[in-house]
Length: 433
Image 1 (cartoon, rainbow, N blue to C red):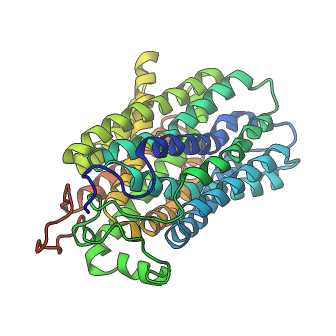
Image 2: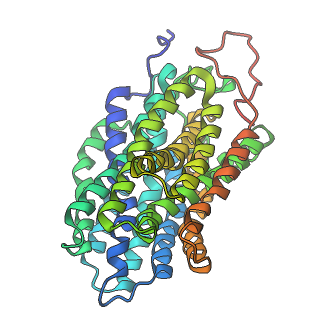
């Protein structure tokens, strides 16, 4: 008996899956943006002798752990299912943030940021794959996009907490909130299916028939999955997704580490700079949902290209003297162009692969692309040190934004059926190459 079109057969319902994914990524967004929020406080720490270069290094250390987490979690999610790797990642992330809160010196603090990065890197591909498999096909981009706005909402919470508690409180206190994920472990164990199943209407054409049958680790070992992603059918899209993720993550992690500091350098006080950080994340939430609605109308590629271009325009605007309301709007657009764009790229990757490859595809895309996350903070640090102009940091974002738009533009459009392909239908058309 065929499932009713639009009804997930993954064992997970869209509503709870989106809500759980949003909460997990909200916590992860807090952990991601916390370094940027405490950046000015770190620079003024009386004992640790933190410089701008040190701040960039801390951001890069956080990002350095992310490829390890992303690749390992993507493989584990396809091998063991999403549930167990998600529980392990949440535990890892919570303990790492606790260690950051009690770190007594800069060396230990730097080590905890590396460990935190591994946890952050692991959760994004796991959550994206889980929500993608539970999503209603006709609302796939919207539901996955809504969950991924948790990253930006977490950034908003970081800005609010930082503006409320800093500089009066010790900045390490803010890391204690990162222990919250531990309370989600029983919820994850209850809601996340142990076995990954594909919704036939979400599968690429050649995966539609029999897609509701769970696959086994033995049938699709990690080497086989990697070979498939680099085989002719997927090679072009795989390489383009890796490169576009690199460009997107340069923007995301450069901004998450440096935006408050760049605004302080432009003449704003710490409180005002954190307001710009809050606007940045509000824009990411609103923009991602709006772009996802457009993407569900068959315009995912267009929405992703435009969002990259908006990031470039917004950063140029932020570099110029404008009325404060306009700068806040530009900061919001920059947030969509950074976090929103990367959310769309992740949706694109999930949309372009069947369940048996989805976790690995997301993990490798984010893992290889995490080089951009590693480069981003140090790239911004180098630009601000080498070029004395306060505008330099903002213009540094324009190059990866334009590069990302070009890379996504090079993807070839694919076709996806709205229901399982009828018997005898062609099964050769790729989704995106």
